Image (cartoon, rainbow, N blue to C red; front, side, top):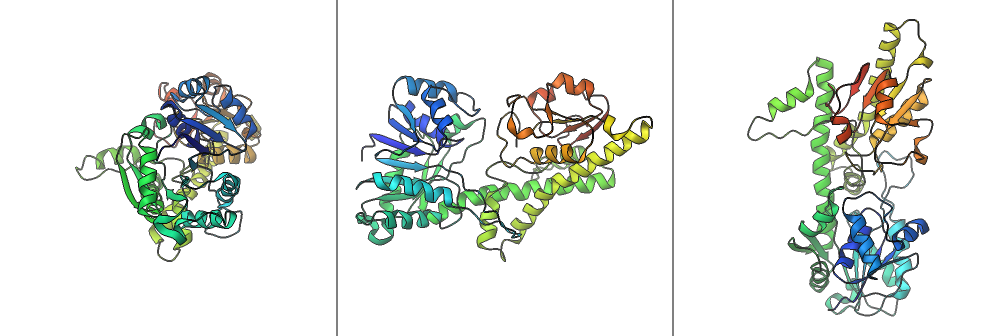
Length: 421
């Protein structure tokens, strides 16, 4: 079929780059977001996130009239839903996925759907979410038919296609990476592939919706387990007085060993979240995945305890000073190097915990966010030079390129990334 107009619901770290890629191929794209500031920013030809090359693509697409943002969905030939899938606020040991953003997106696009349209769920979701989306659409539009009841003859095509991109490289990877296309029917998959081939140069591999959902969860759960091994190893090595980075370097000389690097925990919208979708569905079976999550979620507490010990050591070595005289600097807040994304960041959690428990000053160095960032709480955002000069204790949390270029600061160091050790 011919896709004259494409609508992308959710203009965040995945939705906006995806909308921009379609628009760069001279397709009319309507981007939809509930954030009026994001909508206004995009319509000025600017972007509200940090992603290399994206600003130029969005500017050109808006200027040439191929991309327009709005808060209200308009009729289109294809709708891609790329909204958050967080957890519900409950007291359970196993977080429950919150599909309310997907449901809200469905409610918003339902009135403008027409026969022949394609709806794709790109949001990373628990198994069964695409089928649930189809049910919500059917409830809202009883005048249309859907794959769950009419198979290949349905009026609306529905598929799941998870994104598989690395922040900082999204523009390139959207084009080059293979895509998993999970249609509710063969015709749904075929139609979705036709859409993505507008700009995707990688292979589009067909499966069913449930397997496509599970594929993304499996990829990130595998990474989470591997990181948990490295994080647990770092704690063991600390207790045994062994340099974990040297140890990993030596072990990785084995031709079939590739241990990842430890850190302060695991963050972001994927690896720190997706394993819980599997655990919540199959809690009795997902034992390794569950344990890995617990290991990685507990790592920030271990780092905070190391900072407490460093403060104690400093005071013992400087008896004329009190705790209020001790300045702690946290280096990095993003969930990974050289981006501005703070979602699920263990560095953010550690920084807030330090600023709350420490009576002295807490400085923060994060070169990728604005100096008036609202999420800093009691901490003070400063430049790298000031933190290096004034801090007594230096806590390395994110190995941004700026931090790798300098020698280890004077004072006590808690290095969770091994660049100043």
